[in-house]
Amino acid sequence: MDKENNIKYKKQERKNSIITITILVCIALIALTGISYQVALNSAKVGYVSLQPINVTLSSEQNNKLSVKITLSGKSKNLNKLNMEAVQLLAKETITKLDYDSIVSEDGNEYIKNVVLTALRQEFGDDIEQVNLDSLLTDVTINDSNKEDDNDNPYNIQDYLKGFSWTKKE
Image (cartoon, rainbow, N blue to C red):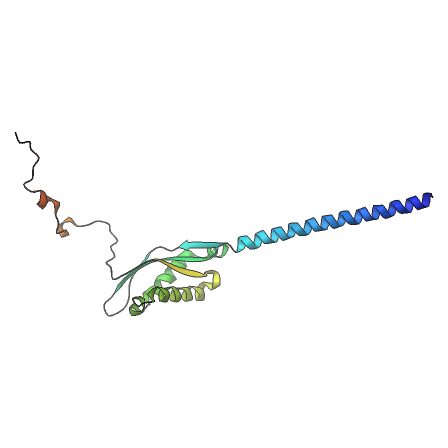
C-alpha cells in the first residue's frame, strides 16, 4: 500500500510540475509579445521636422522670387539620425532648380512636394516619408531686415496732424 501511495504522490507531483512550468511559459510568452509590440509601436512613431524657411530667386527670365517653409515627416527615430544642415542645403538647391511655370500652375504645391521628396530620398534614403509645405509665396520681395524706411511711406502721420491742436475753447 505504501508503494501505491508513493506512486500516486509522484504522479500528482509530476502533474503539478507540468502545470507550473506551463503557466510560467505562458507568462513569458505574454511578456515577450507585449515587449515586442511596444518596440514595434515606438519604432513606427511618426515624427515631424520643420526646416528653416527657404528664400530663393529662381533662375528664369524674370528672376522670380520664392519663399517656402517645408516640414518633413517620417519615422521619429530615422529623422533624428539625419543631418539637418545637409537636408536644408539639398532642399534649397532643389528648390532653386524648380520651374517657375510649374510652381504657379494648378498643381504647383504637389509639384514642389514631389520634386523635393524625390531629391531627399535619393540622397538620404526612405527615412523621409512625406514633404509638407507650410507656406509658399512667389514673386515677393524678401527683406532680411525688419526696418521700414519712413520716407518711403506715402501716408505720413505728421502731415495729417499738421495744424491740429488740443486746446480748450472758452
